[in-house]
Amino acid sequence: MLRIDDLTVFVRTADRGSLSAAARELEISPALASAAVKRLENELGLRLFARTTRSLRLTEEGELYLRHAREALRLLKEGHDALIQGQETLGGTLKISMPSDLGRNMLVGWLDQFQAQYPKVSLQLSVSDSVSDMYRQPIDIAIRYGVQEDSGLIALPLAPDNRRVLVASPDYIKQHGKPAMLDELSRHNCLRFMLDDVIHDRWSFYPAADADAGAVTVDVDGNRSADDADVVRRWAVAGLGIAYKSRLDLRDDIRAGRLVILLPDLLGEPTPLTMLCMHRSQITPTVLALRDFLRAQCEKA
Image (tube, rainbow, N blue to C red; front, side, top):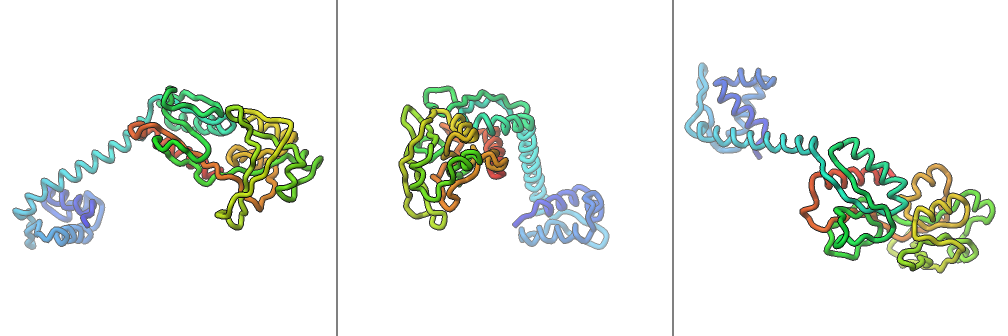
């Protein structure tokens, strides 16, 4: 396999007419320079230089190959420069829709950091738990939870292994106790999320020891439901009941001790977080940079 360093030594030696001069410019030893040229000649099966004790000159094959070597190094440099320039000039306007709780409490802060890194990026945010219609609304990117059913959209995973967790505040646990098994949820006030007027009151769980086992689903009830997931989280932190939400949404509350995970031997429903675009043409360097940045933040969570 051809090595870029060997091509560089070959071109520099041809320009200077001397291996030792090329070695000095490249800050390597003459022995390394000589080895690079020999390695290149062996790879090509050609003699590039005619050597004597006093002189070094290009062979006919060497002169022909020199033009191609120069062009190869030029193209590689252009490619490197283009990447650097792309990193420095990432910009444009991104219209992004996102879920309420994750959006307000985490994504907005993460996007502040992203803009600080790439100040030429402008953002237009739509924060709502209603599923945006990407075919009708002026949205470039939708950040959504759950398995995506629209196979026509381009999916860029952010947190593919995210799941729901069952939580309550220390105050709620002190007053009402912890459920020891799923059946006991029927005796607790469960804070439910509502989407399109449909209340999510069937909660599914999986044995942690066997994630491939079938789901166990329980019906829950309570005196509060909301179509805004941030409201449900705030109710849970206030000690008003048990919530069943994305672990990403609850990261800071769990770490700070404001919420406690219940029934930790059970896995919650898979809730992957995904960035969606309508067309591959929308996956610009800016979008890819944002994907990589958000994925890194999710991994820290």
